[in-house]
Amino acid sequence: MIGVDTLGVAAKLGEAADTATAIPQLAAEVGLDVPTAYGVQAALVQRRLERGERLIGLKMGLTSRAKMAQVGVDEVIWGRLTDAMRVPDGGVVDPSAYIHPRVEPEVAFLLDRLPEPGEPVGDFASAVRAVAPAIELIDSRYADFRFSLPDVIADNTSAAAFVIGPWSPVPAGLDNLGVLLEVDGRVAQVGSTAAILGDPRRALDEGIRLAGRHGVRLQSGWVFLAGAATAAVPLRPGAHVRAVVEKLGTASLRAAS
Ligand code: OOG
Ligand code: MG
Image 1 (spheres, helix red, strand yellow):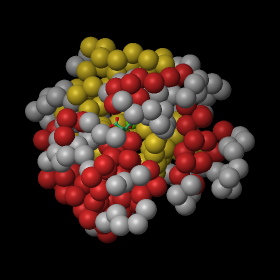
Image 2 (tube, protein in one colour):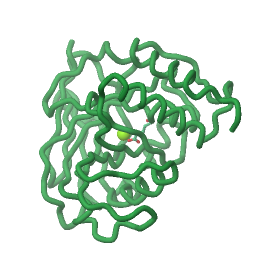
Image 3 (tube, protein in one colour):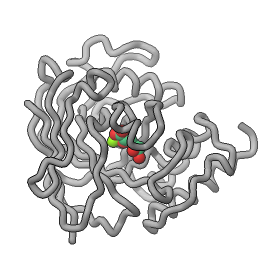
């Protein structure tokens, strides 16, 4: 699409994140479609790389019905992860650094030998070195956490921070593991890894395919978040959050009060 000021739109989104200040949706006004929105996302993440962050992985979004229903967008999307977004397992995040942070339980993959572009992941166990329970902290830069498909893509799919629990060898099956999100010891969300495209392994095929359309090739050593298994819940100051995935264990974080 001609005439979209990609760098200008990325700067608006970048400043919204840096200052934890919501902005109005912008896709309709500036005429973003899906391909131009991914161009804005690339420019937005490039701003982070220029200040010294490193690209360390990729995340999938809206791979479950629960998430699609929560935000009213029903397309699978992907975004980019940098090292500055990673919080150590059990670490503390400052909720005031975000606009309206939410947390959601995820499954993470540590990527290993990936197929050539255009080829499917034949052998998952050679493409993925390890798997782990994870928490994603999402924070839409748009007011009221409301957005269209191109809006959320441009905003790097609401990526803000993530925690990865202990890595385990790839288990025989990943398609029907129980998932819990606990806040202050109480169950806030219950689900199953089956909610993630029927099997979270499918999210990797989708990630390779969708990112490949935009010239992005997944790398060995990258982290890959397969998408949330349940809806996200608001992160309140002082909260202690745990994501528990059957057979994989627990990832946790604490919000400063
Ligand atoms: C978009 C990001 C969705 C997921 O796991 O489905 C996502 C949003 O909900 O703001 O990260
Ligand atoms: Mg997510």
